Image (cartoon, rainbow over all chains, first blue to last red; front, side):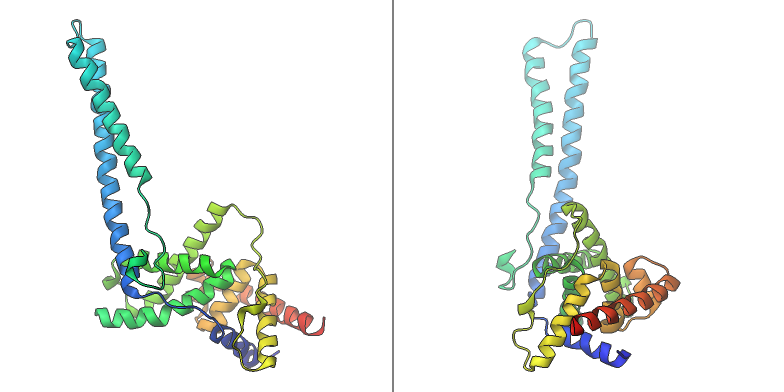
Length: 109
Length: 163
């Protein structure tokens, strides 16, 4: 089989492809949403870790200081910081990544 | 590049990318997912800094990386293409339909790298250097791989015709 025949076969195969091109606006909207999501996740990760670390630091202070913090304060602040950090990290990890843009348009994102 | 130019480039390039991906991954829906993701990634990158001639090969390279990610996720050993006999429903000539199905079957019997390279060579008409960049092998290796892939393809096409 010569090169010309082979090229022709491939061209026929390509011409036979049946697909619809999704609107570029949908793909751009998806790209923008993905970028926003990425930025939000980054901030959430930083804030989550900072809160968690702050909780751990306060707990260390309570354990290490001779007198410690007053009990009601330590009971309130430590779980609040740690749980807050965990909740934010959870939210960052659980965020829904944008679906493939459908042919019908931007509302399909 | 203006939005109008970008739109024209997108309209022209999407079917080409989809066609290649469909042969590489063997599934039209997965090909659509990867094609869109590749465009999204390209648009997220600084597209203004890329020369126009480099943009399409760069897009194909992104898509190739995404196919690798896809396979890693799926952890699938079998990469053979599904047989889609109804893929050319509107081809007018019966002889064309037979030839097209033969080609699809022959491609399905080849390795991912082989069918990827022959498609890029025969459909896109890119040089060895560009194909090498996309599939992640050296320019000289592409020459050898393309020779072997072509030989294999011709044998497979002959086998389908006569078998």
